[in-house]
Length: 302
Image 1 (tube, rainbow, N blue to C red):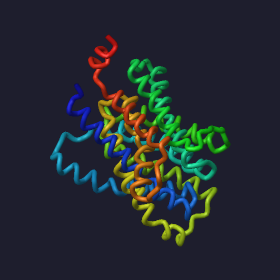
Image 2 (image 1 turned 180 degrees about the horizontal axis):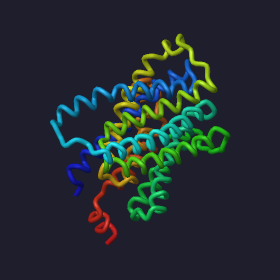
Image 3 (image 1 turned 90 degrees about the horizontal axis):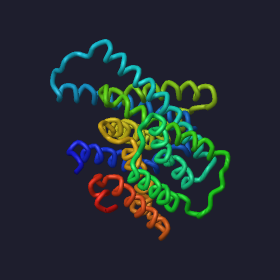
């Protein structure tokens, strides 16, 4: 049986995936007006600024606690910088790649972190069980059916960036798994987005030409993505991953692709093909398989 904490954290990760999936439209609209690093700069600073009052409110709600030691503060700062550098790489590689490749392929290749995470885990001595390996394989099949609508796959230049992005997201999941056991999740998220914003600003100033008028045009999508996708969803990821198996966490978060497809059908009237519906069902089956307790798995095998 799953503990109450695992049920709660699974729900938080699902909510994060839901926000990322529904925020896709806002992200696409924003990219019509401003360049990728400009978009990342603004959404990151918006997310970080949104979390500052949240830290104060949560601090008062929890009541007075023992003050952080210098070692605790250093660990928080170190974690925030490491997470910020990794999410800077992951998010911007994905953002730039979307200029060169299809949305479906972007979703599929980015979500390959569900394969990379257990591989990284094996490298660090965390071998996944047969059940999780089967769930990951099933999820890849589901993602392919859902995202690769044409049914064919040709590797192009932008796809290389997406593969590096998937690798970076995988590292981000593993880094979060490490630091979320040690530091406050909301503070960690706030610092990581400030770091991401600073790094994105440096690249933006060198390679892009931000315009105030263009930023005004995309203000609403930026606020939506900055507050919800960055500020809320990534914080839910950090809090939700605490005590969770990183492989299971990555599977739940990969539902972003399914939710994006369903949101397109429900909100934008985009028709889901039989192939896409089957892909959604297979993805949900993979998540259910990953959540099954070990005893159920052993009985099924006997």
